Length: 137
Image 1 (spheres, rainbow, N blue to C red):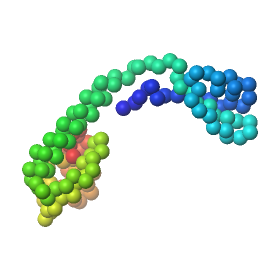
Image 2 (image 1 turned 45 degrees about the vertical axis):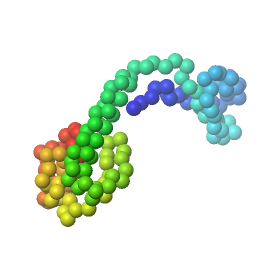
Image 3 (image 1 turned 90 degrees about the vertical axis):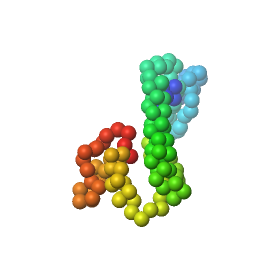
Image 4 (image 1 turned 180 degrees about the vertical axis):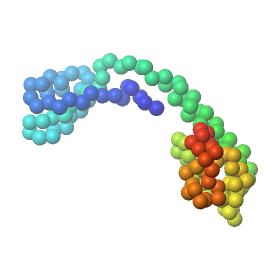
């Protein structure tokens, strides 16, 4: 989610007088000397417009979390029990270690919950039916 409070202004300054003026401002954050006659100054924005609906981003993340939990507990854990270990998660992905004879055979039995459109076209599970459908794995 975008945090507009973290936005800043960057200015390239070539005169000492202008640099001193900008450094004295309450919005001054930091500087970096590039050359003897060029300095980059970063200032915080003095006026922030909160025009991004933060709660929508929050709701989307919560829905994603619910769907991922559902997939984990109602599909993976039910099917593989102790033979599935969740290694790590990210905002939109789950990474597993699964002990099974043939993972592709297992996926084929529940193809309705997977988007396999990025598989090679000659792969047995390749399908464009659910291509880029939201909320699939």
